Length: 526
Ligand code: NGO
Image (tube, rainbow, N blue to C red; front, top):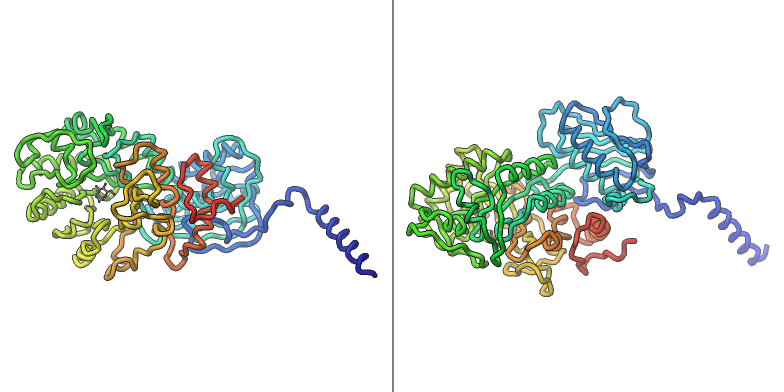
């Protein structure tokens, strides 16, 4: 056979081969569950090489007596319906589910409340998600969403196929607390915005939302026994806009919405500094007994409660009591940062007294790292934002630390000198710097067991709209979520940035206006 004949017959064989591949498989990449871009990265993934496909007979089956499980079943069904167009119902599992079924399998007796670990078994026939508590099922459901094509997040009918690679995932978080903070004081954000924020963070398995509810510029939560706090103290914001506040009903609505997404609200009343809005509302809270003017600037450190007046503690007791009664979560955040106008011994006296008040209402204290310069009460947590020495002091007192180092975790820091929104007093934080750190090695003397978790705060001096929020939060927040969820040994920026790039499509599908960092290969994704 001549060389030419061999060439022709090879071409012929190739043509036959190509023609014999069914049209639907032509674009199909080999199935590999372990190559999927899940954020945060799961603990273990084993691929088995096939595909599961959602189809028009797909339903969500629940196995286990639990109202919460039913709710999660409906939650995932509602998320899958619009784009697939399938009429997905929530049914009770019988053990005989049709191909295409999603099974939510609660293995515990309902007593394990917030175990977030889960496992997922994806075969050609079914997706079976198992966990000992509903929280784990919810976390697994977020993984499931991420395994489907990005267009699953669109609210209009899309073309399938809706394939998921087969295999097993077994997953659990590294840290108990993975959170974000939203400052609703400098600029007020409506209930709907806060709910969207909850949706965004819970998609990345964050489980705490810290609400910064008071500051110099505005008091944002109704306190029935001190109504002027919101009537007057909530009436403006940075720049002089009309501000706003949550009624107790609205706050409870946020709490419930978050709870249904396994996000615990941490309310913060910042004191004794950062209190001008309260000092403008009630004259008696001031050292000199004179009410302050409302404030719409962005300076810090000029305000203080009267630390030696009894009425101050009567006031704080009322505030903590009302908020604690509306807050099922374990924490109450007392602020305590930048109290530059409070004398040192007054500060210590004040923080020690307020910690006891919080405790008396059944809550655990969190405060910014300055509270570690006082005697921290049993169980109290210091939130490290500025001074490593304060975080170390907390650990020396046998207390835990929540990590929000401003140089890494602050979402209001600009990405670089060209970023229009945000501040840069701590640093410019590009996406790699925000991701590339490990809480367990950042501060000498502080180990993993001393660390409650991580939180990414978004301060809102310059943030006025949902679009602004999204631009600063994305794409950095998913990285902080991964720091909290995935063991540091499994984290690597060069690998992460590829996964993050894939999420660009998801951000778009969710209508999220994100920062297209040059460090992330967004455009390599088709
Ligand atoms: C600091 C300050 C806040 C600012 C923020 C801006 C803390 C804990 N206190 O962080 O009042 O809004 O920086 O980045």
